[in-house]
Length: 204
Image (cartoon, rainbow, N blue to C red; front, side):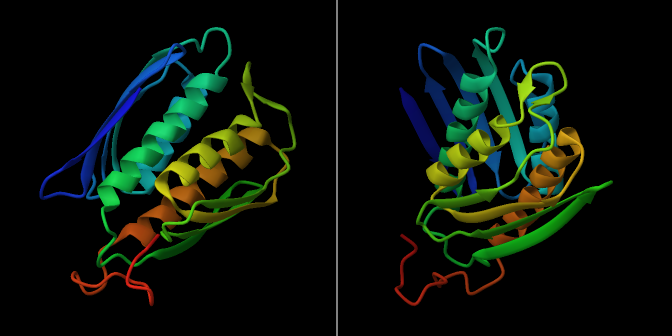
């Protein structure tokens, strides 16, 4: 069961989602704000902190779930919730830049992310992780699971490419930082506040 709420007068939303596997509450503020994350998965918290801080987003997430068994449900469900929140916060997407792209390095790792707030969900993900597990128990494949859940539920088009890396932690963090920078650029209010940036007059 999921509930989303766009908060009037601001590009902000509140989301709650409960399943038999996870219970999540979150707020997203495209204008910035605190970044407070507690999912029960330390490495994932680290990545979400990078997403909020480098994306200049206000993100507050609380998740209670079965992460002690396997982080998969937590990571995917938080991606779903944050994607739903982004979609609500963007509204009809009037006045936004729409497109954003960024490169982010972390030591030997280099990632590129390109985002279009198109209203059409599509993810191209090309990131061959150099190691299958990050830290003790975070599967490197969960990086893709998170971004797929977020991109699809936010109705974005995104191309994520890991250009080089020898360390999976560095690779994941470069992807999250590049994604944060691209998302910030794409969601900024840079155009006519009354105009939807599309020749169709709608982003869907």
